[in-house]
Length: 289
Ligand code: PXL
Image (cartoon, rainbow, N blue to C red; front, side):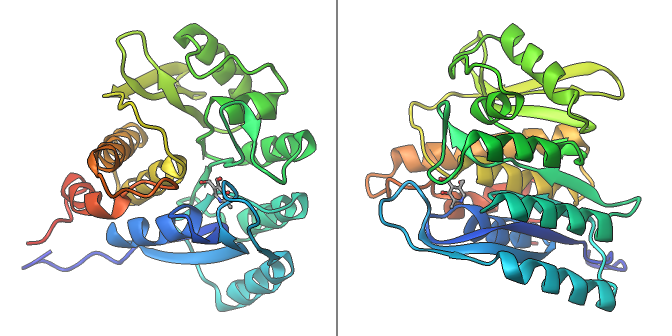
């Protein structure tokens, strides 16, 4: 802030994979959250040549590095305003992430869990239902969880109702998800009766549902969940309320999809989130002065 004392920069840590090509997980989270003016520490859980929607991707598991990194940071006394987890590569990593929560959680630390593991009713390559259930146990320790409909059903072990599930069906899923133990459960990618697409959430403290929809663009792409969760985390630590941060994330994700849809040169494996970062910054009040 010009003319006034700048605030201390916020710091978060995000724990997920590096897909070298894919514009998802860390290659989305790092640029988006950094652009939001937030120091973004990372714990890479694996290095893949591409995300898992490609065939024949390489996969280097980094599970063995997770505990030494945590222990070093603990000795250095690092603190975080949020811990945001995404794609995790194995069941053991879920337990190691719980150790991060235990070590670094303070009064002010918001824990955001995006159980990135499925879409369109199907688990990504490499996961099984046992992994999905275990992800449910990670969600139980979060402040806010951000599954899509597929991930919600897989964690709960209930049948997948399809992408066009009604609001009533999604509300039932939310009540079950809330039973896992997070403070707030949000399901993304919900189709509303008015034709919009957005999120539906449930706050276990106020016992209220909340929702928000944006224009539904006839284009589906990988990585939009990661773009949404990253923008949400960036807005949240910029002191927006949870609902306002979710709205900013939904509008940003919609803008990214729209931009990609209109781009004749688009790639088919991700959205053009880079092009919409100025819009995100405008929304969170960090655009160029
Ligand atoms: O965008 C979610 C995601 C993250 N990481 C990896 C993935 C995917 C989706 O396919 O494969 C490795």
